[in-house]
View 1 (cartoon, helix red, strand yellow):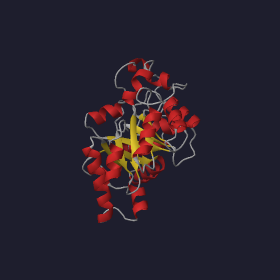
View 2 (tube, one colour; view 1 turned 90 degrees about the vertical axis):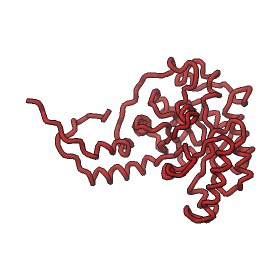
View 3 (cartoon, helix red, strand yellow; view 1 turned 180 degrees about the vertical axis):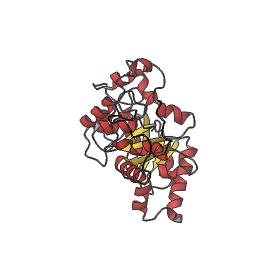
View 4 (spheres, helix red, strand yellow; view 1 turned 135 degrees about the vertical axis):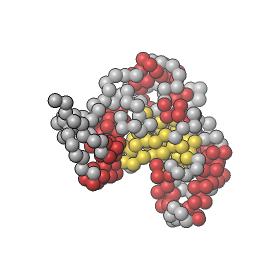
Length: 290
């Protein structure tokens, strides 16, 4: 006799929220052969096409969690190395464990040093997020360190980048990398204008919490909103993309968003799951939810 299927419940819609605690097997198939030429950074292509992109934040070293997030529907993963103890070896293993996943690896480096940016790109990051940008010189150096000659001075070195992105990686990387400048303090319209016009900068990110910390004003205060307004206006007038927290998806002009952290998703997903206990046919033990 055919078993009656249970009615879909809203717990199914929570998958994205609880993927951080699910173990999702990565597709161990390299996409390198399909990425020999052209624009393979899907985040950059979406931004060029005027689409919105969202990245989930990962600050823990477990490859299973990274893979769960990478397959959950995010456009990219914001790998947090500024405010975490993650090492480049750990991040390299995370990216490699889930090669072929749809979410593109971005790394927020500890700082815009040549060593940090070289390591992040060598392990396969196609996005470099530069924190604490107070002037354009920092972004000029970051672009130089990230890009190969003649646009920059990145050394070829070694790494797993070729196995991830194809044999023509050296010839195609400059067109595929996305470089993000994080504005974390009220630096003024003129400085934002200079930062946003640095060749090679793709996104200017308004760091909401740090702007509050540095300015002493909260969201909604006229002084705070004035800072956000000049960051938005100067960035968009320079033809760059504007970034901010996912909570700002309803703000005009923003198209690049940082999503919640793994721990925030676990809390939210667990709370919602407890409030929406599924009924009907019990899940099959061992099912990884793919």
